[in-house]
Amino acid sequence: MKVAVLISGRGSNLQALIDAGAAPGWPAEIVLVISNVAGAEGLERAGKAGIATAVIDHKTFDGREPFDKAMTAAIEKAGAEFVCLAGFMRLLSDPFIDHWRDRLINIHPSLLPAFKGLGVHQRVLDAGEKASGCTVHFVRSEMDTGPIIVQAEVPVRPDDDAKALAARVLEQEHKIYPRALRLIAEDRVTVEGERALIDGQ
Ligand code: GAR
Image (cartoon, rainbow, N blue to C red; front, top):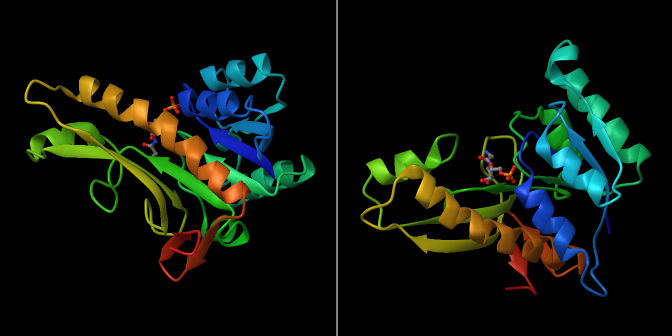
């Protein structure tokens, strides 16, 4: 399965997907990395792995839809049939989300549907949660919603600050994102209503 990855920054989840791709028989190939931010660290990671990159700067477009159209054009030109958001910090327009329906996934650093949006880890601490985690899900038009494919839970420790919790969650992100992509590329995931089923379960 040919995949495009959309990033805005560090790209550590992109790196996890790249690293997973080194396994023999891995069923997903990253053919393009798009960043909306020039100089994003993830672009360097892609370059080192020999993956084509593109910078599509949202600021140079007159609104979300033309920006999203340019991304779809680049993704399709690269031959990708599937899109992973990996720390891509722009909201996507409905036409983009509809076009890529069930072929567009995101990773979010909380146990969705709890703690959507930004600044998640501090909000988890402020709420006194005993556990947090991360979620890979299909993208729907409402932010941070959509059928959940894989989640991982981590404990929240009494002495955690947002940075410590983020690091613990990120370690799990790097495990579940490749796992989710592999399940999809192996055709083991189906979407039924609001649920993503793995091997029919
Ligand atoms: C990750 O923690 C990801 O879950 C989060 O941004 C970080 C990107 O890190 N994404 C969101 O908050 C999306 N709403 P990375 O660039 O090192 O992969």
